[in-house]
Image 1: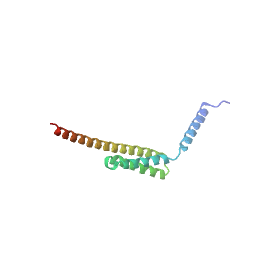
Image 2: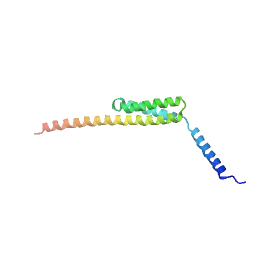
Image 3: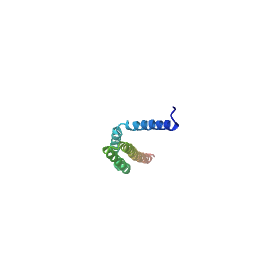
Image 4: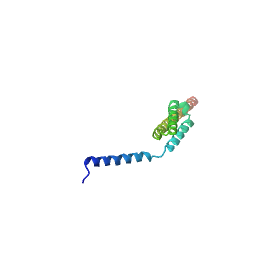
Length: 125
């Protein structure tokens, strides 16, 4: 006796569902994502993001705290999402801080060039 379409469909659906569930269960805990987020926050702090990008750094710190809380409560998917977002926010804070420092450096050098030009123009006969 041949199985009916409904039976085949049921078995296929059950196989797909079992496969999806096993894929979700096989993901490792997001410890590397949490470590990367911590490192990104530390890197941003080291680049003076507290001064140059305080809002972005605050968002990153908050996201890291949420990731740690989610991990503690056993919600690994949320912990992974929060950790990835925290790392991205911390990287943004780092980049903004580096940009601000580079802009300040350029402005300082432009001022020095301007002063040198003025001196040179004053020395000419």
